[in-house]
Length: 338
Ligand SMILES: NC(=O)c1ccc[n+]([C@@H]2O[C@H](COP(=O)([O-])OP(=O)(O)OC[C@H]3O[C@@H](n4cnc5c(N)ncnc54)[C@H](OP(=O)(O)O)[C@@H]3O)[C@@H](O)[C@H]2O)c1
Image 1 (cartoon, rainbow, N blue to C red):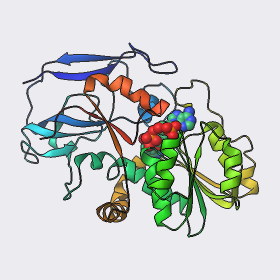
Image 2 (cartoon, helix red, strand yellow):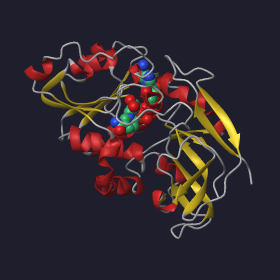
Image 3 (cartoon, rainbow, N blue to C red):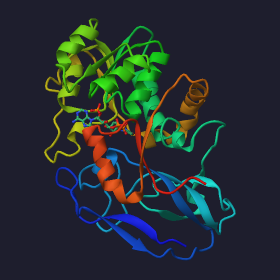
């Protein structure tokens, strides 16, 4: 039996994560107690919120404690079981099993991973996992785009943004994406059917929004915060909606992130801003899946995954989310699929 490897938080990062903030430790796999299951991790999800969880700041769940295994979502395969619910070879969702090669958990804490014909396992870590749920609830429950309305999505070529923008298209809206670089912008307009894309790395975002959204903006699916959020916010229409999904431009910044520069626009234009966290919506996941699964099966919803190999590189891989050096939902393949 191979040893268990796991990343432990040793120090709270200041700014970008540095070597020494986390440490990879190795230990023997312990024996299972009654009801427990040993799961070999297949795929680990790397998410912008991992950086938030490393900080001792006001947030939506407690930060990871120093000395604890780094938190993260994963799926894996059952290697040993002392639970009636699972047998060897079952593929399971560990919830927040962590940055670890193996998870030992009570069988009651694990969920079987659905396996639809022709759908790869990685889809359950992206379009048919938390990523898809985030995009669906943010867009459909909060953004509520109507046919003909203008929707802007930031980090639009990323995991959540690319799904959110396509959902708005499926609902009949005009969709403009903001992304970094020509290749990502070309993918949005060429393959995903976005009506326009803005390369924030080479264009003036405000001027491009004026050109591409002549009638203003009805929904801002906000993923980035900072100057990009401000440029979009300043062009939002009366009764427009802003699902505040994320503010990734601020996660490595220890100073307090700023809001829109002209907050009074919220009042003058009767804008609804709602921050949301996908976990709040998990009891309603079935509503989202009732649309997401058919869209996936009918090829109406496209997605990409960026899979790095090996738990050892997790710290370096996480940085991709902050530089954009990834193409699709960022995952680590920790061990081979069964
Ligand atoms: N509320 C929730 O429950 C929930 C759940 C999941 C994710 N989120 C949020 O959704 C957002 C996207 O997450 P994701 O998992 O889908 O990751 P992702 O979009 O696949 O990756 C992050 C992307 O953010 C962009 N980015 C990073 N730093 C930036 C900066 N300073 N300025 C502009 N763009 C920047 C980069 O895109 P470019 O290459 O285009 O620059 C990067 O590829 C994040 O804010 C995340 O926290 C929220």
